[in-house]
Length: 408
Image (cartoon, rainbow, N blue to C red; front, side):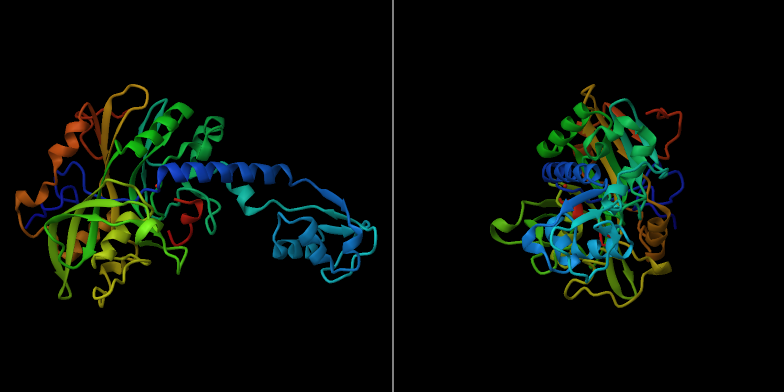
């Protein structure tokens, strides 16, 4: 039987496929990342050799403690490492960590470049360009690619690839033109600005919610036919690398609209395929919202074990990332004012999972639709679809930096 319920998931003749993704909070992200970029620029400027005369009140103390006080911008562990690497001299002589500092001594420090400083460098990271003009570029991000350098991922990111591809133009923009993010293990579409004017406009569109985003997610359990998850999201106070649904003023408004498009059984456990439309773009929004209502995403290593929905059977072929893909993206072009939209095929690993789980068993056209008219009505002036016939489409065509870590 031909799989038809999930369009584009490897079915013959399909033009595209469905998907899902998570955006960072654009306004906060823009402000915090810009401040961070400025801080890093300041550290880079100070990476040259430094010399300081030790204040009299610190005479006699251990060298590592003195360094921590006179160079507070560096951690003590980093300073100790530099002492061991002979990057520190006291009165012109190589120093030791525990040696006392003489009265009136002069300390010379030659700091090594920090990982943070080395991260904003061009690297030939492959980029799957879906659309490109002088103002914007739309990228189909693969799972495993980090968007922005952060702890645990200081190189090989999408930002490094943008700096390599666009050179000085990207280097002159905050975050190389990035206005929103996808989690490391989430695949799919994202837009990047190529000019400051376009970046400012896209951030405003994200704030005004005129950027349309639709995803495919595979979740545990039998989801309702359709609904809206309206639950504020904030950083989990018990585990700062996670996000959580919060009560009161500690969370930011977050709303996810969903509709089930198919269901199946895996080792007697129900699983559902859903479309999600984001009304807001909080960090990990879809993953947190689905887990909150007891339907965590398949393969999600962070939020995948909601109470009562714990997986007891490994997923096919060892699938071990959140089953989430950014399928559709729509926006108003920041220069021309034209409405545009794009679609991205489901990647091979997710497509194989869809088939292995048995989705698409019923040929029910009603299962396919998900407010297509609502989405398309605002974004039909220009359209470009990945995987479509070239005759039909021209070929030219939201929180903190720390969220992009190894657990993203």
